[in-house]
Amino acid sequence: MGCRDSARELADTTHDLRWARDVRDSVRCAGMLLVLLLLLDWGTERLTLRRGALWVGLSLLLFLVLYPARVRAGANWLSSRRLLPERRVRTDLLVSVRCLDGVSRRLLLRDALGGRVEIDPDVLVRNPRLWLRLEAGARKSAANGTLRCGATALRRLSLHIDRETAREVFRASGLE
Image (cartoon, rainbow, N blue to C red):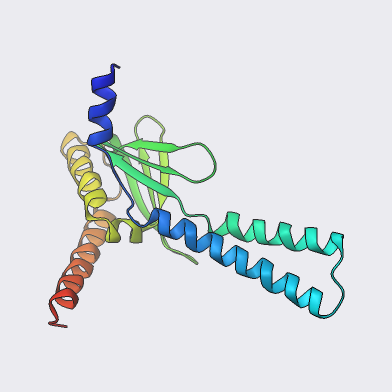
């Protein structure tokens, strides 16, 4: 791959526009917890080096839990990266799409090459360009016959995104 090809791929790539803000919020949360715990211990005169290290470790753990995934998409691919290596799926070779309900909703994408990505559906709601990339690839998968499971989940997600987008347009125009 030459320099022009990699530059073109970067230009064609879209990403989560709120990711940097979410990282800052995670740092703020962890920092506030650390400050509160240190102030509490200092105020009760129980602050020691060991307890301070414990509070730093606890704040670091909170930061790691809150650290958001960086979601990016390009022509026929979608990737997600936390602190571990990047996971990527080919959206034009999707085999299954599942919505996982639980404490937080997740969207699990699997492709024919064994790729697996799990993302928060709200990232797609907040970033229409990411959704359009995923939807275009999923349509190709459905047309090719590789998408065996998940057409209903994609339809539901599409309706949800359309509803939220309309709500935002009404809110921005003052018609809500």
